[in-house]
Amino acid sequence: GRTERVGRILRVQADRRTPLDRALAGDIVAVVGLKSARAGATLCDPAAPLVLEPPGTAEPVVSVAVEARRNGDADRLGPALARLTEEDPSLVVRTDPETGQTVLSGMGELHLEVAVETLRRAHGLDVQVGAPRVALRETVVRGVPGFVFRHVKQDGGAGQFAHIVLDVEPLEPAAAVGHGDPVGSVTSVDGREGVGRSAADRDGFVFRSAVVGGRVPQEYVRAVEAGCRDALAEGPLGGHPVTGVRVTLTDGATHVKDSSEAAFRTAGRLGLRQALRGCALRLLEPVAEVTVTVPEDAVGGVLGDLAARRGRISGQSARGGTAVITATVPLAGLFGYATRLRGRTQGRGTFTARPAGYAPAPD
Image 1 (cartoon, rainbow, N blue to C red):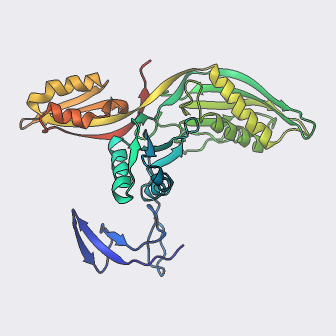
Image 2 (tube, helix red, strand yellow):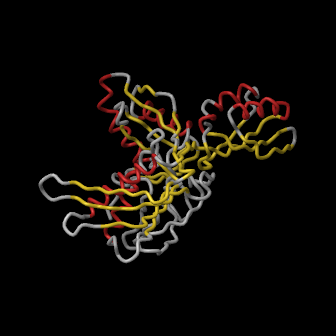
Image 3 (cartoon, rainbow, N blue to C red):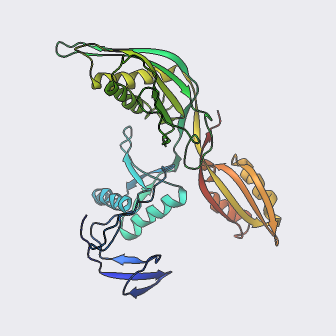
């Protein structure tokens, strides 16, 4: 591991900072002077080395396009965004291949607002932000059995040959709303013939081999799985990632000279891509579990507003003149909700939201 020198240890309470001589187990403190440590790193005494498992980060569900207003700030925007992602790994920065725009993704509208404000305040950047967009997914609702695909390439040099047969089917439940899992809990099966593993695939993808007699060597089976994962990056409906699908390699064939892992990976990618075009698919959208606390006299208006945002009310209670409403709401319906709620309740309403997986989007 690397060596860090701690300049100061501080206890932070609102805008007050109290210097400390040391921090004990369970203390929450701020540390000044670190050079290379990143979020999730473990700091320990060299005499007692310890590495804690870093906290997991959920998949971003909301994105905005970010660009510098001034030409002089354009070169500084990239390093500033890189610094943001170092400090907060749940933020993701990418370049849209079609538009060339820089896209910042996070866990919600407020999360991105805070990140953009940090760019302005801490880095002195005047940035322009596009309208937020949610991260849609595509899922299989009716699959195709026995899809045959043969990849053959002859260009005068070494050839490529791979023959595969795939069963493509939806996972059950096909579009369950899970906590951080787009399709609920699944059991994944590895590339060995008929052998399962207990770890669930967080991408909502299960691959298994049912090939018998060694017709497809194991290294080629793994290559087919890798190719299938490549194909799931962009679905046929709108180029969104595909989730909630089970692919079974049922048969295949090889060529003594022209077969290779590269050929079978290509067959997996192109074969599944074609097979998905023959499947029935539907779009999924991220949803959030929302708890709204409002005065009782504002309940009617708030319920109507949630319904207009395609929310599903799951509970309602009252205590001391205050009503608590719980609902599942599409994340796209929560854009601007904080402002709307304040207006409907004269500033007396509050709400919290947490990701609750994915649900079918309206047709």
